Length: 72
Image 1 (cartoon, one colour):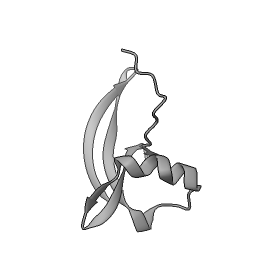
Image 2 (cartoon, one colour; image 1 turned 90 degrees about the horizontal axis):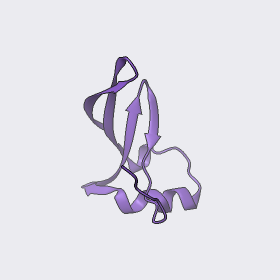
Image 3 (spheres, one colour; image 1 turned 30 degrees about the horizontal axis):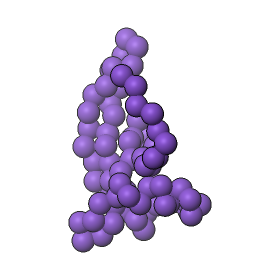
Image 4 (cartoon, helix red, strand yellow; image 1 turned 180 degrees about the vertical axis):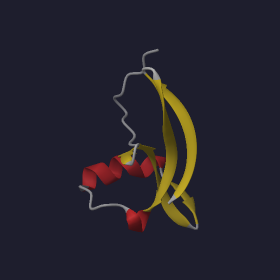
């Protein structure tokens, strides 16, 4: 896994948030539809890697959703 850390502010505290790339062979067992949603945003650097966000030792995998609405 490769990692890059960014501090984020949640409420009155600053929490470290890390963008990580996990190697394909390190992924937990996933349902095929979850893997299919993760695949388009994966990258290949000799091996396939999948992006995730690490917050307080909890790993959140990123997926692509075509039906997602973006609001700002």
